[in-house]
Image (cartoon, rainbow, N blue to C red; front, top):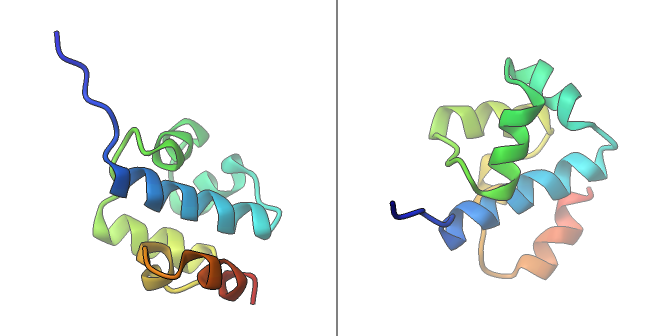
Length: 86
């Protein structure tokens, strides 16, 4: 059996969700409850194990009080980290 490893993009998006969630001091449980998911599913998203669909990403971003575009950005990540804190 071949195991799939998370794609770099899925890991990046998950890491950005995690970073923003932590900036807000929000737990995986709280985020999960806010978007109708278990903390285990949030954990899988943050690790990049499961891919986040577009509508789900939009809902998560709204809950995290940030544009989904900021989560998807791959260029200028250092600058974007500062902007996420705003």
